Length: 270
Ligand code: ADP
Image 1 (spheres, rainbow, N blue to C red):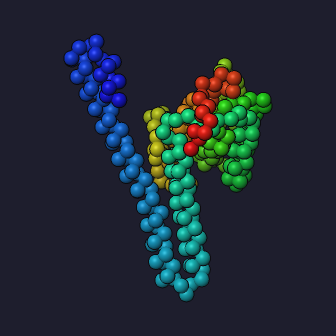
Image 2: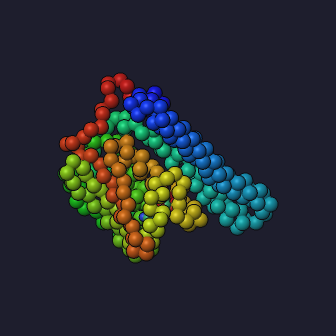
Image 3: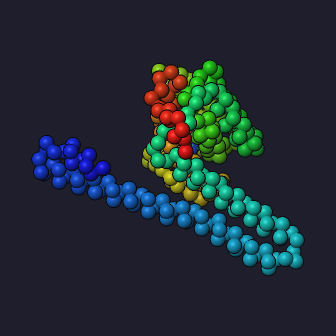
């Protein structure tokens, strides 16, 4: 890492070299701080449901002769356990893809199938809020990638759209071909995201409203996963949003024709 810097700055003379090496140190310190923050955040996020579970277990013991209370508290225990489960699942997904490596076994993926699968997985939640999920434009479009990861990314976007939208609204998932790319966007008529937060929402554990996110079962990792899936596919994710009127998230992926993603050499798949 520092060797690359030294070679690159050599013609600048001693002063330039010192300056760039100093930058390198700053970057290393920043990466270290991010890692420390991440571990602290993970510990905190894990401690909350674990703490609630042990408290509920104690309470249930005290309420052993009140069947109604036992039912209520065991329901809450299931809820906390489910939260813990989502969090662990998201952490595992994130740890698989956040290295910046391309997806390990890319294959042609029909975009309409990804959209249908992602919508199917969010449908129950949408129906419960009388939210209409509409999709279109994906017929015949294909990308080069990992279908499971792509479904996970799109499901996270649609799930957020449902969670952060009021009842009786509409969510549109549309795909289109744009040059060498395929763009899949998810538009909602929800609460929107303040402009000052729009840049940060793709960071791990960043939430505009932490209490609201937790209450709705959010882990704060969904958009970080979407971002890393996009990057692993040689694409990106962007957001347009206006507070009070809604948000549009766009996933841009290289189309099957113009792909730069490297296929793995045979036998190298982990
Ligand atoms: P969470 O599990 O909290 O939803 P995400 O990483 O998926 O975590 O999203 C980060 C934050 O971005 C959310 O807490 C929420 O504040 C905001 N957000 C994401 N999607 C939307 C959306 N469609 N509408 C409004 N806010 C959103």
